[in-house]
Length: 293
Image (cartoon, rainbow, N blue to C red; front, side, top):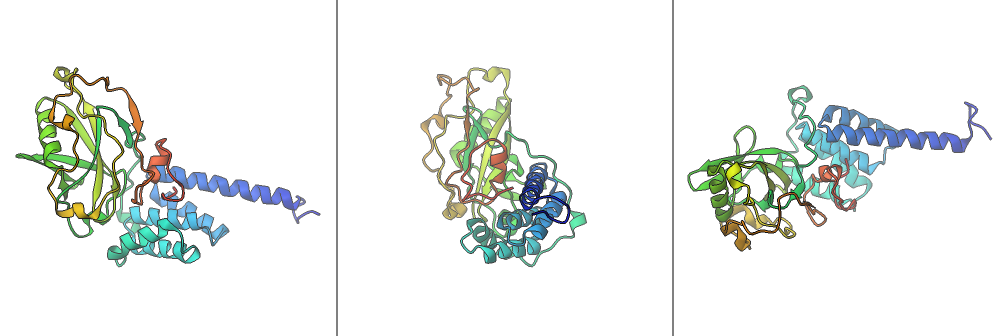
């Protein structure tokens, strides 16, 4: 049996499957490169081909979110949830975007963000530190954060604040870590900070050493970290420093690490909704728990 174009049904099905896989790869590639308008278009094409494609609706919601079209993002996740009420990604994002669901930016007003640095989420022993912010902001500020967003580190007296690129306050480093950062900055080191997850009530960041002063050659910026627990909402109003390694108080000059060892940032139990970028950075994630690109 042949189709109208002379091909067999099996061949036609294979071609459709191949075309779909190509579109999925395009959608993921555009998302990784921060090309959200193009990602939007490709996922819409996928949905036209398969109206019950839950993953495409989740990716569509992510693209709308990054373009600050929150009402459209909310609707996309709602559709995903309607198709599959057990979908964890849709559930989390519906809850997260609820306060913003009446906000819709014009698509032309949002600049492209450019590609995400692929090593943002990779831990390097002695050079990176992952922690939850304390005294975090209230309102929609946290809800609008996405995994991979670059933040600013601002020293204010004996405290270290974290702001977004527009200078809007996000939260603070815990006191012992803040003291260490102030000391390291004073010695000539330089650091960058990025969002790894935001629940809308708490924010986790990774701090990365980007320049080591020659005087610091035998000293690590940070101690080795174990697995970091899931972010908790109660962190909003606390300034207490939780379960900090004693090494944060020392110089670490006798540490065995040479600063070149790397560990993958484990997000397998994270309850954030934006760690799809982590998979692109080479870190294994649980596909049932994390957003697809």
